Image (tube, helix red, strand yellow):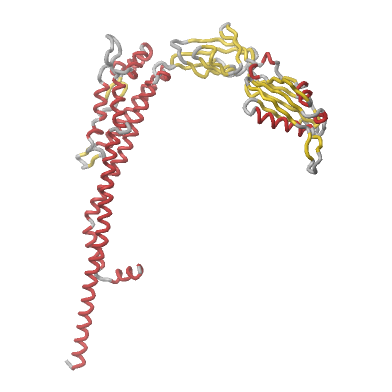
Length: 467
């Protein structure tokens, strides 16, 4: 049917007139579609602005978090990282150094059995085994059978390797996170059994008890690679000797975490010092987040009279005025500041350009504040009555669940929905209109065809009559 309709349209001399009329009548639909596109661009722009505001808020929260010590950060050093690695430091108000000598590292408790032939039956000959094993605060009793069914209903002795495999499987089930059991094939004939604690230190040593059967002989003849009294790490810091079960140390010096790497009385020096560069980076991060938000809003709320163009959010005054209000807030003093205290962002060298962008106007002033008055700098950013805290509160009013942007987006969604309905109505109307116009022109075409036929009949009659 479609092919017939298309063929008719191709041969219909009035089809182009129908299409022209429909095109003229489509102006309302095109206008609605343009409005719909504009609303969708507005919603996208709102989402992008919301993202920029949220990043600005997140940056302030990072600076406010006391655990981050954003304006009193420290950096750590090790004179020899092959001996000790310093992981982190906190609670240090001034530079500190610590001399460390690592006598020995904490090790896992490892026990090895005697060599035995894999195919032998010496273990099975001693009968089924049972043993109680303790690792740290966990104790389990394990039982192992030394006989197996040969597949024909007969019980036969397991080989040494099979017995150890059964023992290893039982250990894995009982101590999956505490103890590792391995069977090493030393050569083509001999094997050796190994038990190794997962955690290091004396408290995690392997302890046997109540062994009977083959397990009494097996564990009784196992050799420990490291004496139990040497499983803990031993190190000296500034003349004080410590013993720890792990090589990761966080309780020897308050606020300092480090890892022992090499023993053998190896020496190194650990250092902690203020990290002014990191503090400066934190301030720069705040400025960058503000500027990204400011520029994002400007890019979407501009109006260009010369080119007759405007941003998708230009008509939303609340969005347009946000950075203006934030800039005014940033210029306010810290409420309740004492005389001589750093009270404004301008006191630490931060200023604003004409386009609303924030920048470091005086780097020396900022560095001096970070070095000599870090607590006062922190108060400017994290105090309850600080200008930055007020900026965050203003910004959050836009991004909260039921905030300003959420309300604006809801309004845009409603407008888009109404436009969808109106466009759908226009589509249906144009379909009917096109069919009506086509029907009219089809009727005209039929009238023309009948007239042509009548004209041809008259001509034929006159010719036949000799006229």
